[in-house]
Amino acid sequence: MPLPKTISAGPRAGENPVSISELIELTNDLRTSAADKISGIQRVTGSLRMLALNAMIESARAGTHGRGFSVVAAEVREIAANVGLISEQLQKELTAQIDSLSAHTQSMANAAMGTRMVDLALNAIEIIDRNLYERTCDVRWWATDSAVVDCAANVTPQSAAYASKRLGVILNAYTVYLDLWLCDLHGKVLANGRPDRYSVAGLDVSQEPWFVQASRLTSGDDYAVGDISVAPGLKGAQVATYAASVRTGGESHGAPLGVLAIHFDWAPQAETIVRGVRIEPEEKTRTAVLLVDAHRRVIASSEGTSTLDQHFQIETGNQSHGFYTRSDGTTVAFHATPGYETYRGLGWHGVIVRRPD
Image (cartoon, rainbow, N blue to C red):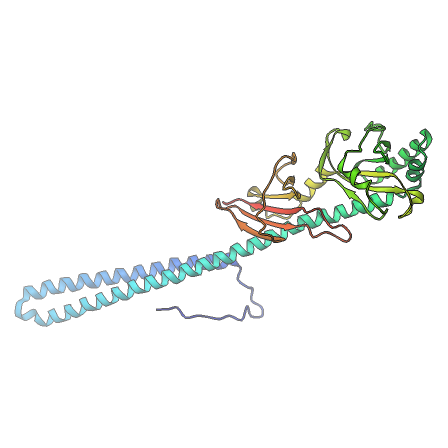
């Protein structure tokens, strides 16, 4: 006996829509209520059968005087049997339909949870994209500073000291950086903003990926960036290094004179971002927020500072975003970097990992 179908046009004015969690609770309540009612019917059926059996026994004892009573007892037994069959059929149909309703409801709950997790993954990667976009603007702007340009054009102890002083002033205002390095075209550090903390003048950085990229730039409007790395010259700190070419007159298409590198203090900034993603309090103990780079290295984790030697493989299915559930019940949601303004991103992903209860 199929249940009647009800089509709802949505909540009426003044009514609140039913949440998925409430729908799951209602489904469970329906399952319990149906089981109780069917159990009640089965108890009544059992009583009828017992009554019919007792009636048959008494009619047999009464002999010819109990024949009429025997007919009634037989009819009661038949009614009990029919009610029993109806009860069994109802139980099967209700169980199947409630199971189907429960499965659909759980599927809706999983989809809603997965969609929310994808949104959180996007939130994490968007925040970092906007943050790093500002780094690309900073390095191209500061590469045009007159003290930086003059030192790169004609390095002397005086010009290097003044460039170092000027870079120090910038660092005092922009505390997210560990240091700023001015390099010549051969990769030698000419000046830095914190010489009292980092003694890097004369350091050869010609083999650093960010310098190699920056030395090939054709315009002051462009920038280079290296992967998140540990910088020995910065006491082993994790950095995101952005670089731009220093050019004659600070002009975009002036002759190249050197390279300015800015070292973003990665670990504390990234940790603030991943820990700031709005995970529900009851979910925090089993949910991790990750930033994963193009090489699938974990470069930030809400569960502790990344050592940059851990990897996390994402099953993207060639999609920019989505979610999936592993065989152990862990749900993984991801979103690729969308970039921001002129910052195209580096192939990173925001990832949310939710372990089962």
